[in-house]
Length: 283
Image (cartoon, rainbow, N blue to C red; front, side, top):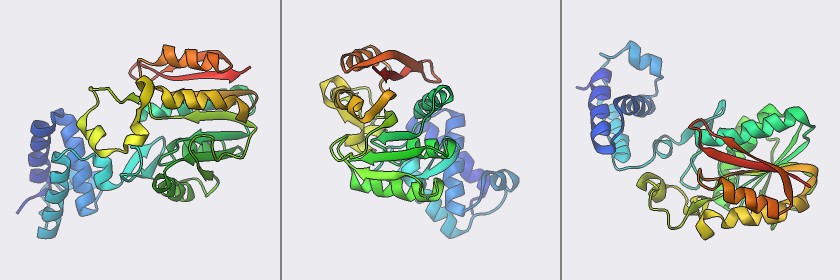
């Protein structure tokens, strides 16, 4: 019979070997999977390493471990992902939120400290991560969110109900096509920005996350151009457009925003020091 400690050691060794994770990364993932398999928290695992797992627990753990060894993202296996200060439901229909995307939330909050923000639109909301984070922080603001995927929008609405008191207005829309509201103080988006020719993207991402949320034509800039071209018409005077992008796209995005009528264009760096969010004010 396997104990908690033996399961963690053997599975972390396999994850290190098969997925080229560091030992620390592998142990963290093993703990997450085992917590999911036996319904206990991390404290329980560390407190009871000699606890013997029953057959059903062992079988379930081996099943989900194999899924991870096959390259399936851990967020899809357990069905959740931590973002900001909450835990989101995620499915194969939604992009898995990354910690880098918290930068666009932080940038919007910084703007809100300098001017009154009463109405925000999050485009391509996916799981609803950005919209929910802003709804929880800017409790007096009106938060709107859109996505062109009905399946992703269903997940976002579920998350919004649980995590944001059902305060977010959702739209199924291909960018601005079905957006009837105007007068936004901030429009922001983490759009598809990976080039369809990018060979550096990991198989774990390319094979398991929705391609429409990842890839964009025109060197990854097609959707950014679409948003920037129309955003000014939906913004208030002195409204802001915030766009997440690839770490080598900042210069191109700044030019696109300038051509589209934005000023005071600035790029913010993520926690790795990469250029990640470019934003500007409507003239």
